[in-house]
Image 1: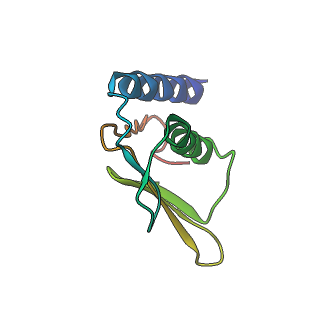
Image 2: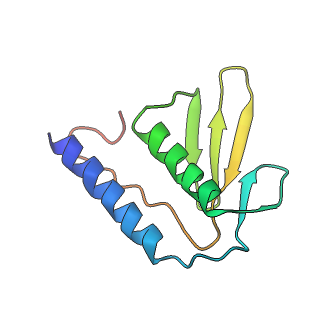
Length: 102
């Protein structure tokens, strides 16, 4: 129950913070090697990917995020990198009640 509350708080906080960002059509977004202009749908897709890997709706060998990119490594040593919007960031909240990571 506590874990669900912390996940809900974390998702709410990240949605509130992302809502504060400007919606600039010149954002750079996409996979590595591409310099495409991000559309609102692409930005939402990156956010959905982050959420899906966080709640384990999608599986990968590893998925990590930093201030600039979401990096997903598959079992075949393939790596996909998604650039995050320049005017937004990702906040991760670790509850530290029983453990820091699942």
